[in-house]
Length: 262
Image (cartoon, rainbow, N blue to C red; front, side):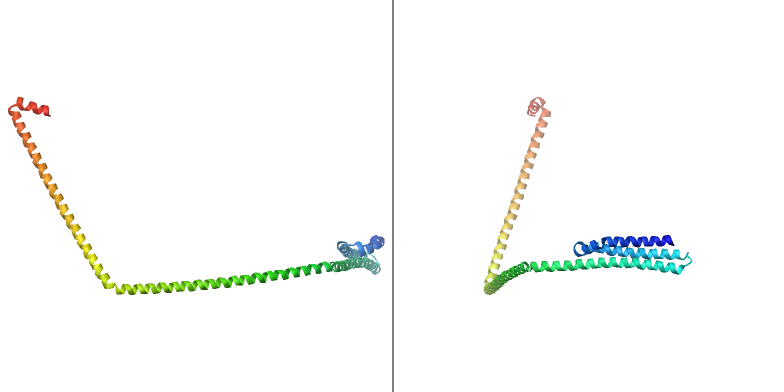
């Protein structure tokens, strides 16, 4: 128990000495130089100290269970825990205070910067407002021009549609007039059509007659030519037969000339 108690008091003494040695520096840091990270590290350190105090208290209670005067031992261990927790709370408080101080300084810095930037921001806002105003004027002017162009386009399309409608009406009237004229001239056209058909039929009949006559003449000429060729062939055969007969009768006289002729 004495060794454990000495160990606990040694830890507390180290914490107190460390705190006493750095208290002034930490206070100054929290005012001017402590960062958010450092302030949070102080709070984390305080949390670790509390956990260590709780762990040590549990160990001390175990050791106290082995002693005769348990109540005095436990009370002493509890007092040591309270002292360690108190130191941890002080460290945690300093960390939180440092963080609050830093937040306040940051807010004041931002506010000071805002005040310092106010003239510039106001001038920029004024410039931006003027730019927006000019942009709106340009936009309005563009819209006005666009509306005029759209109105002109609508008028152009309307005029075009009217002109096309008038042209269609004229075409319809022209077709109606031509149809009326055709209706009036139908008897004459029918008579002319019949006359043309008659002339075409007569012309076709003449062509057919000429074709028939030409075919008949061609057949007649072919028949005459065939008869002529047959007569010539018959005469040639008759001559050959006579020569052959004479050749048989007088070979020396008729056959020699026939052989040379061949």
